[in-house]
Image (cartoon, rainbow, N blue to C red; front, side, top):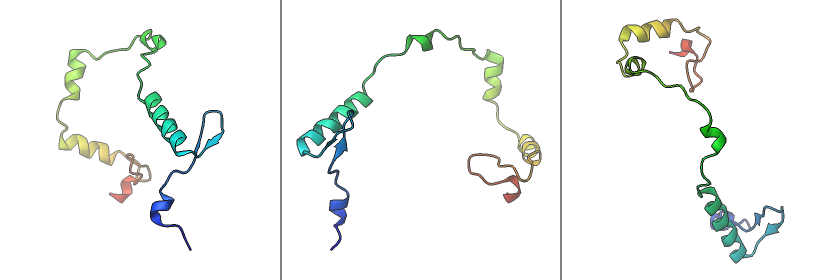
Length: 97
């Protein structure tokens, strides 16, 4: 007879960092708590990241990003896309639309 849905959704064993498997419920709980404590602990910002110089937009360029897009700009962008190229993350080519 097959396992119930409840039994299939249980975690019965976990692999430790040393590649050994553990199945004791108390050890499983400790491993899960340890994993998430490490995952969400702030280790600080790497000093090497702070050494980079990042460019910033001046006020004029920044304000152009907030401007409304006109229907003419949308039409121009849409009709200049190759029909077999995708226009974005959805994967549909321009000819689909």
